[in-house]
Image (cartoon, rainbow, N blue to C red):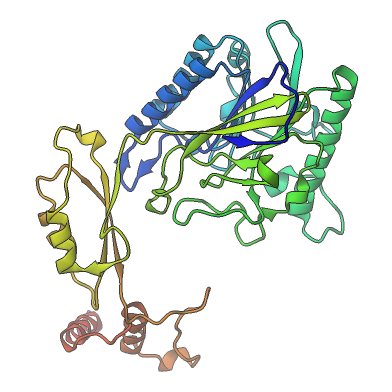
Length: 428
């Protein structure tokens, strides 16, 4: 548990912050419904035990804009179950870049009966002005007493932000302008109703300096800058609940946080501490933050445990794996195999699968590293010299590409096969 500034104990507001569920995600071809169901069942138990006043879900509820019926059923069952075990709970949800914001908002009339607010889209009036008021959500107890004010802003696309003329970066500057305008509106609301409640902001974005997860996080803006500066968030905000980056991380001594994803979404995330964050507020200030570890119900394994190894060593390590035979197939561990090799090997997968026969494990990934492959600078690729296209021979392209991929020239047998293919093509 992290200690924040010492504040006189009073009636505290308890809040849970989570994000990036990615319900419906298929993990390298394997269905994850059981894992997601386990997480949501655990989260309901946390709500029942902790009895929070507010639950913040900061985007990427689903993995795709067209989630399966099963994924949607899990989502709505969770919302209903959380409300059933904590009648005073108010939930605020914003859409992430993986979500269809309008789809999340569609059942709002029904969700209102369970004290659930969803902000999935940016709405403009007939003059093109953004409706800022819908981003400001009062949090009230069952006696209608104001407890907090939430600034709920979904993932913003370039078309969603205000137009800033002569801006250095219209997109990033537009995001800052929108947060600034909504924060002012929230402050005005607080001054009018209760000056001693916290203002909490939500967002689904990439904060500059945040640690990304390789292989699982989709770029927010293709071809342009996407990371926003931390100065986007005013000091008047007691807490900022963020989504998008899957690794739990914090800024400004814990008042700005990514809760992180509750499950590993790639093998690069298997060592993360997956969590939900519980917050307690005294008056306008954050008094305490506690990270609640999410139980991992499906194991992630790699062979070798670190780095890469020759195929013979990999096969031996697979034979030595100690696995639980009593697990149901949908709970078998995911396995990533990492092979060190000099050349492509068409029999590699077959040999690995043969070694895994009868073992209660799911082969999810085979990665190969070629030690002779030259290291290129970021964004740099090996290229043939620029010349007239008519002078480039297919065999030269093949030889160059092979050496760039594997770090050494192809064997004579492989070159012979390539020439035979080219001859067959020429005779057609």
